Structures are given as structure tokens and as C-alpha cells.
Image (cartoon, rainbow, N blue to C red; front, side):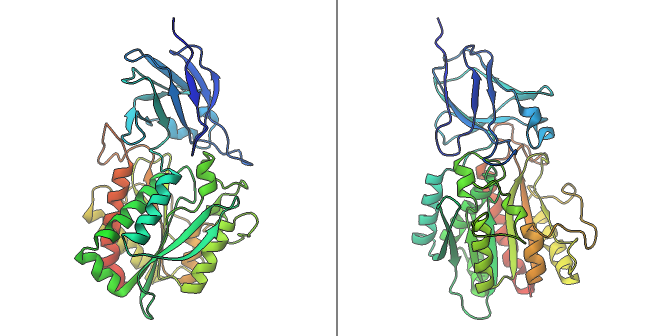
Length: 379
């Protein structure tokens, strides 16, 4: 006689509501919305008490009501027995629910929307940046709930050096963004000759995680006040969006010569960038730099392409509350949103992992190569 499964999400980035776990072959679940926001899509939960080798089936019953319900088609959930090695589980969207099934190798397993980047690993990454990659803690902001938001700098801040800003995970469910930041910091630690050339003329300003509250609570889009941080760059306040308020203050203090905002996209199975073509003050120089960045990165890696992405904004019609547009307008610099898939890269699919933390880290290394090639032309 089978005992009922134990399903929990009471941990960092956990999110699930258990509707009925009495039947292991038809476990009914729901995704919990963000705090003070109707957004939802991210899920992360642990299952205990499974029978090894027997089929277990799970149904996310409210998938059709999620923020990006078209994203479920072609998507496969991720799973792990040890929270280290993650693999894709074949999944089907039936128009209402996302369904996936497996016969487990162990009695417990974790499922998630994407390979999670934990707060514990975040703290490890910051320590690595400071103590092994020779970075400096310039300032520390605070989230709504008081979690630290470190601003790191790799470089000495000498006059005349280019100021390259990279921020990640404004949208807390987009965990591939901090995996990307880990790739950046890994390469800083290695300090290869190519990177040394870049750092001779540029400093890197890094915010590895913009939205720690949202990630901790298992949100998809918003902070603890229900604010979408990437829609707060014209009207950020210390009360509702202190995370953005802090970064904007630091940008004013140090200046910006290039800006990269790292994200994940639920629907599009490719890596791509969005840029500033709709800004009222868009310059020919910005247009040239955007095209150059895209061409160089496309040539370097099969994991980047320019055929698929967001529709371009009409001239003067950009949403200026987006970080990319706001920073590009304020500093008249190369300013890009970099998007990675929750699904897979259809140009280079991996049936085991799909898009993953490892691939996000490698993309970051490639992006640093491109920035090094372009640094002298940024101004």
C-alpha cells in the first residue's frame, strides 16, 4: 500500500501549492502568485516518499492562467536528485495544465522551472569575487526586506577607464541570469591575457542579483512590494523599488559607458538581445555599437543569434521605464538587454539539460570576449 507523497516548498525560491497528493500517478498542484502581484510562472518544490522505479505524474493545474501561458508549449521541467545535477523531464501542456511524469531513481527529487540559483550560492559567489577574483565591494544596497545587494567592481577606478555595468536577475524567476554572472566572475578569477587587456582600459561594475526578496519567495517577476523592477527605472523609490533606486544612485556616482541587463525569456527558445532603437535620443553611434556587438557574438558562439527576438520599438516609442532604455538614454551608451531561454536554444539543443546554468556561464565568458574586442570603440 502506497503512502501519500510529501511535497514541500518551504525553502529558498520554493513555490508550489499542493491540491491533491493522494495519488502518485496524478498529483495535482498549482503555482502560487508573486506577493502583491498576479504574476506567476516559477515553480520549485521537493517530493519525498516516492517509490523507486514506479511512474509518478504531476500536473500544474493552473499553467494556462500563468503570466506567459504560451511558454509552456515546447517546455520541459527540470529535476534533480541532489540539487547539483539537473536534467529535463519530458512535459506536455494540454491547454490547461502542464503535465510531466517520471519513474524516479531515488525516493526524493526536486522539480523547478529552471535550474535554481540559491541564496547560499549567491553568497559563495560574492565571496569568490572579493577573495579570489580580486574584486572590490563598492557599495551595498538593501532590498525591501533588507537583503543585501552588493555592487562589485573589478578594476581600480582610474580616470579615463571605461565603465562597463552588468546587472542580473531583476526578474527573480530568471535564475539563468545569476548563472551568467557566475561565468563572469569565473573568468575574472582566471584573469587570462584577453581579460587583462580589457581591464587595462575598463572597469567592470557588477550587480550579481538585483531582486533577492523575489527569488527567496519564489516569485517570477516582482520584488516584495509587487513591483516589476524592470519597469521602475524612471520612477523608482526607496520604499517600493529600493533595488533600482540604489543602482541608479551608484551609476550617477561612477558613470556608465556600457550597460548589459541579463534576463531570461519564457517563450523564445533562443538567446538574443533587445536594444534602444525606440529611445527618443537614440544615436547613430548606439545603432552601430548594437550591430557590432550582435555580429561579433554571433560569429563567436552558436548560442547567440539575431533572427529571433522581440519586435523592435518604433522611433520615439520605447518604454523608458525599462532599464536598457533608461540607461541608454541617460548615458548615450551601448545599452542592451540580454535574454536567455527557459526552454532550450533551438539552434543548439541539448536533450538532457536544455538551456542550463552551465551554458549561461559559458555565454558570459563569450560576452566578455566581445566587450574586450569593442571596449576602445565604446566612446
